[in-house]
Structure formats: structure tokens, C-alpha cells
Amino acid sequence: MADTAESPTDAAETAETAETEALEAPEAAEAVKAAGAAGAAGAAGAVKGAEAAGAAKRPDGWDDGFIARRATDKAAEKAALATLDALEALETLEGPAAAPADVPDGESGAHTPIGGAYGGRLRIRLDALGELVGLSRTRVDAAVLAEAGRVLDEASARQRLSARHTVVAIAGATGSGKSTLFNALAEVPISETGLRRPTTSAPIACMWSDGAAGLLDRLAIPGRLRRRPLAGGDGDEELAGLVLVDLPDHDSAVVRHREQVDRVLALVDAVIWVVDPEKYADAALHERYLRPLAGHAEVTFVVLNQIDRLPGEAADLVLDDLRRLLDDDGMALGEHGEPGATVLGLSALTGQGVGELRELLGRFVQGRDAAARRLSADVDGAARRLRSAYVAEGRAGLGERARDRFADRLAWAVGAVAAGEAAEREWRRNAGRACGTPWLRLWRWYESKRVPGCEPPRLPAVVEEELTARQRVEQAVRTVVEEASAGLPAPWAHSVREAAVKGAAGLPEALDELAVAAAPSGRPPRPAWWPAAVLAQASMTLLQIFGALWLVGQIVGVVEPRLLPPVLVMVAGIVGGPFVEWACGAAARGPARRYGQDAERRLREAAAGCGRARVLDPISAELMRYREVREQYVTVSRT
Image (cartoon, rainbow, N blue to C red):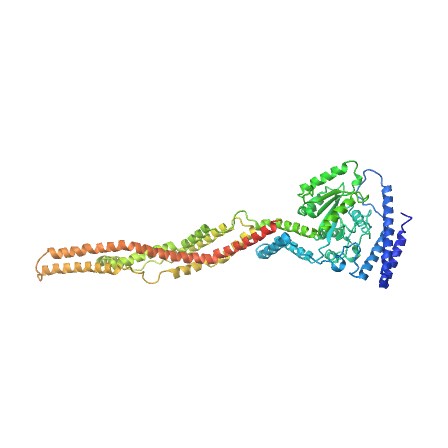
């Protein structure tokens, strides 16, 4: 390698000269290309030489595994970075028309598809999630809806960006070798490796094709940390569209590093988790990341690095144990054709298994559906978090029996039954006045006037009755609210209670007004037989008077003395009067009962209408809204 490759210093100088020429003269683009290729070749030679030296120095067998070894020295790294900077300057100079040679026709930078439409099931689920959030904003706590809102925002943001690029993050713990794997995939030393911990302090990106600037802007990766892989490398074609991001350590002692990891992991399309033989079972990794992200198995790669340190069949045993831990975390494994996480072992230092990972990444990237699969998993996670706010324990609703019971309680509170009975008594009393004997009516009048003075005041009784009626109304409202909210999730049960309490605020007063308005005005209607009964009673009275006068005339001597006829006439009047009154009372029972029932029905219907408008309709509106969001939630939950 030393005979054919130029030194790292010469490569750096060549790249710097080419970059200067490109910036000063657009006509020198070909010179920059040639110089860049030469610099890259020199850097690659230096890298391979350093790798060979490192492999020769490393003893066989088990070692500590916590140190990511360097693949090159500083001079070679600087040369490679200078070469990549020169190529980036060339791309900027030539513009979008200068598509890479490895990009297929129709996929050059000038025709980069910006954004894409989420079709099929995912589009339906996202629309349903948006409807669910919109209908729930005033009912469900904002903290509960925060995750769903974030998913919608991320879906909208990702849709506006390149649809032919797949952003894959490489994450892992300190010393797992993720930066070494990053460099191995890029075939150029981009991310720093070494003894110092943490080595990676900021996310670094490597792009295999143009058009990913928007995606990297979204990840807040500056231009100075955006790199390209080795030109003409093994993975140029199969990894076209890949954007690989090397993250800081997720267990870094620097808080800012951990925050960057969490931020980027929420935005990328897929993740490669790099673990080592010592820390693959680390509780922090499983409890903080793998277990919560178990639903993202289809966009997850779990790589056991440093298998070159494991003797014999130890690598297979560790991989089996790693799969067991992932299964315990609830993460599906992509085995036997089933969708799930990809688990494999490799050595980023020796290159063992890196080709297999590159091939798997190539198929994954060429599918062009990683972003949609990630968003689908995000929607699944949001649905799981929202379950407690939208899934009822039983069948929620207000049945007809509950409505009827509420109407009965309001009717009892407003005194509909008592009002009907009072109306019935009033009707019979009027019939008694019209058809009763005058002597009996005179006696009743005398009895009422025999005790002088007014009736005692009834104000305390009225006040007590009003308090009792109000309590009955409140009890009726509480009962119907309990029945309507039974089994509902807490936010919607609270919403139902609020709607009912708000509507019932003036319900007792409204019922009192209805009771007054529904009271019958004027005298009750008289049946057709009433005049005949009045005439018959008057005839009986006249017979009594006539017989009495006839008898008095005989006593005085004005009329011929005949005792039997006047006595018979008087007896007929005396007996006929009560008989007519009894017959009228019997005939009045039916009309009086119907009159009382009509009065009770009117008051009952008025009370039920008032309760329906003030309490039941608001409750029904809330239940209808809940059913709407429940349907949307069912749509969101169906995968």
C-alpha cells in the first residue's frame, strides 16, 4: 500500500490546492475531481495501512472492549476531511445539475423529490389522529395530547422533506465502537475514534446522495459536520439515499450529549444500536431506550460489535442472550420472515459482518418506506399512551330507562303527581257543588264558618317543601350523571359532570316556573250531562219545597187535608236529591280522573322537557363527542 498510495500530507496538500482552484476558476472543475479522487485514494490507503498495523499489534483473545481503536492517524484523517471539503466545494460550484455518477437516471439533485404523500393506512390513521386531537383539546389535558401532537408535527415536517432519503442514526454506549462502525460503513475516517471519552461530542452525518440538506437542517447538524463516503466505495449504489448519523454516547457524563441523543432519536427514520459484549445487557440501555421503543422494531437494528474478542462459540451465545433480552423488552425480532428488529454480530475493527450490515441497510434504504414505518410506529405509541383517555370500561351512554327514571324524579320533585291529584279533587269538588243537595252545601258552609278566624300561616311548610324539591332535583341530576359517566375515561366523565352541573344550575327555579305555568287556568271543563244533573237536583229540591208548602197549606186549612200526597212528594224530593248527588259523583269519577291525569301529564312533560334541554341534551352532546373521538381512536389504533 505504501508504494501505490500517496502520503497523508501529500493528499491534504493536493486536496487543498484543488479546492482553491475550484473556487477561483469554475473551468477547473475537472481538476478538482481528479485531485479529490487522488486525495481520497491516498487517504484510503493510509486508513488501510493503519488498520493493518492495528490488527497486527492487537493480541488474540479477550481484551477489555471499552476502547474504540483508532483506524488511522491524525494526518490521514485531516487529509480525508480536506478531500471531502474539496468535493463539497465542487458540488456547490457545479450546482444541482452535477449529479453523482452513482445516482440512477431520474434521481439527480435537480429532480430530488421533496416530500412525499403518506398513502394507504398511515394517511387514514394520521387524519384520524388529527381529528381526535382537535375534538379533545377542551376535554383532555394538554399533557396527555402532547405526544399525539408531536407525532402529527413530525409527520407534517417529514412529509415536506426528501422522500427518497432514509435517515439512520448509529447510537450506543461509551466504548461500544459505534464511531468505528460509522467509519467502516463510510469507508473513510469521518468520526473521531480514540481513547478519550466521550469521543463523539456532536452528531456527524454522512450522505450517500444529494438532496438531504433539509433533513439535516431538521436534525440541526451544521454543514461542517456533514460528510460524504469514500468515492467509488463498495456501498455507493446499494446505499444511495442513506443518511447515516453518528450520535454521542447515550450514557455520556455530559448532559448535553444525552440531550442531543434523545432529540435526534425522535427525528430519524431508523436506529442502529451498537452494543458490546460487556454492556449489551446494560439496564440503562434497555429501560430508557429499547423497552420504550419496542414498538419501533421494524426500524431498529441491534448490532453486537467486537465479536472478534469472543472466543469460539461465545459470540453465538451472547447473540442468543441479546435476543432473549430484546424479547423480554417486548421488541419483535425479524426472524423467519417476520417483521421486527434486525439482530446481528460484527466487528467494525476487522470488518467481519460489516458487509452483511451494509447489504441489510441497502435493502432497507431502497425500500423507501422507513419514514412511513417509523411514523406508523410513532402513531402506535401515541395510541397506547392515549388509551386510558379514550377507552371506556363498559358501554358508555344514556339509555331510555335512565332517561325515564330522570323524568320520573323530576316529576316527583316538581309535584306532578300531587298536582294531578289536586286537579282531580278540584273537578269532583266542582261536580259536588253543582250536583249536590242545597241543604248539604248549606251545612258544609255553616261548618266552615262556625270557627271564626283565619287559617294558620303555612310559610314554614312552603319553605320546607321548596328545600325538599331542590334536594330532589339535585339528587336526580347526580343520579343521571353517575349513570351517564359510568365506565367513561376520567376526562370524559369529568366533561359529562361539568355539562350536567352547568345546565342544572337554574333547573329548580325553571321547574317552579313551569309548575305555575302548567297549572290549569279557570274552571275545569264540564261534561255534557252536567246541565241535566243540575236540573234533576233542582227538581228534587223543588219537590221538597212543593211538598212542604202543600203540607203547611193543609195544616193552615188553605188546602184540603190529604196527608199522603204531600208526604210522598217531600219523600221523593228528599230521597231523590242525595240519589242524584250520588249518581253525579259516580259519573264524575272518570272525567275527574282523566282531568287529573291530564294535569299530571302536562306538568310531567314540561318538567321532562326542561330537564332534557338543561341536563340530558348537554350530556348527550358530550357522549356523542366521546363516541366520535372513540371512533377516531379505533381508526388510529388499527394497524
